[in-house]
Image (tube, rainbow over all chains, first blue to last red; front, side):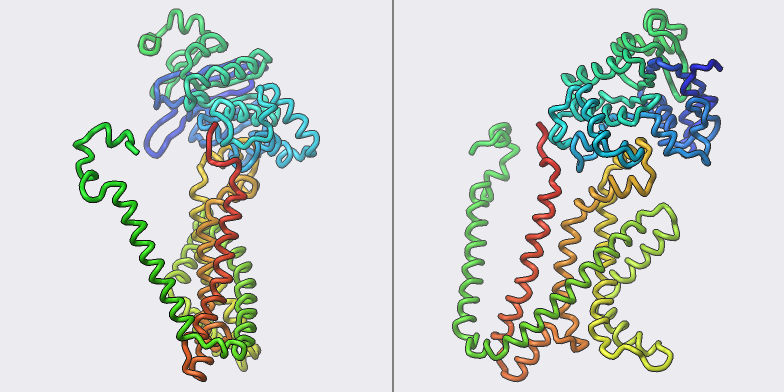
Length: 245
Length: 276
């Protein structure tokens, strides 16, 4: 295990009832890397991501953030989650809070940062995602793309070490996908460690440092995007690419 | 107005093109409701003109005013108590701890499953006899009213709150937890404010029913509004004068309450329902 591994999946198994959805998965995400997880629906890629901040419990193995166990039931999961940002397919913005309040709520209530500092930082983040003018808008006054950008700013407000993106463009109208991917690309360029579950192969190829293909609960192929998209090692990889390209 | 449905497929609208097409239905609705409204207005005018003895009003008004004040105070106290304890009943109901949710469910089953009148009797007649020695409370009627209305309506408010919490998408809790909030904090900051909005109409409905439920207190001789009607009616054999006063009294409480609920719902609008 190298020192700069930030997020580490160590032989994890996950069951939904009798269904074995993640089968002995091991994966290291290195500091500053963008790890893109692709695969057909039902392959377990979103579940894998949700295990990384314990929105799903695993039944065997261990997941570590910076060497600290996430899956340890006695660990302080609330503390660990502050260092793992998560962005959801359905945005999940808080509808009763304005865009700015969505961003500042957790820093204030969880971190105990004072209102002024939180607001300043919140406005910076909204500016970074191009939405400072919408600071006082409520989520249902924003387009899907704008909501998702606010959701990214909200996750970043906790200064996470890793950002998890769970099919964040899947619920968007096609013309709004670009603005969200643009924000993610900038984030990657700034050196954020990211784990991205997506169907956007263009994004995977351009921004990914590593592409992981999952199928039926297993990682079937993993490698740099050039080799993954250029010359897959496995038959399953070839099949998958032939369907999506 | 020719809408896209009727122009698209004539066969599909064959039924609508018969007697009950949109236009006929609209005029039929206007006719029926106008006829009904006219009937009610005429009946009320007839009662006011021929049945109500306005000369009696000054005599009986003081007792109605004091009854009105009493109803207001019973409603005020039991509203606050039933809504605040109802929130806890609802929270207990969605608890992941079996025993907590089970007890809450049993509570709701009992208080929703037996008549309020029965509950009033249990508290008014039943409880004092359980006391070892003499029951210490002299005027047990008023406390009975508060306790019965609170216990009963906390069950209904609890169900409304449970429904409101259930209608908040799971993603809200997940988003809050993924930001590092604990369960209690996420409930307080994120889920409950939204659940409250969802539950407002049902809670408001229940509180309006609470106002009307005070009429049952006449059976334990609380001097509320129905009790005043019975007094006046038996003394004067005039039903309509006190009935009109009773109606005015209840409506002057329940109509503003309905307005208040609408106002609270509008205030929790959070930017309206429209997407840009």
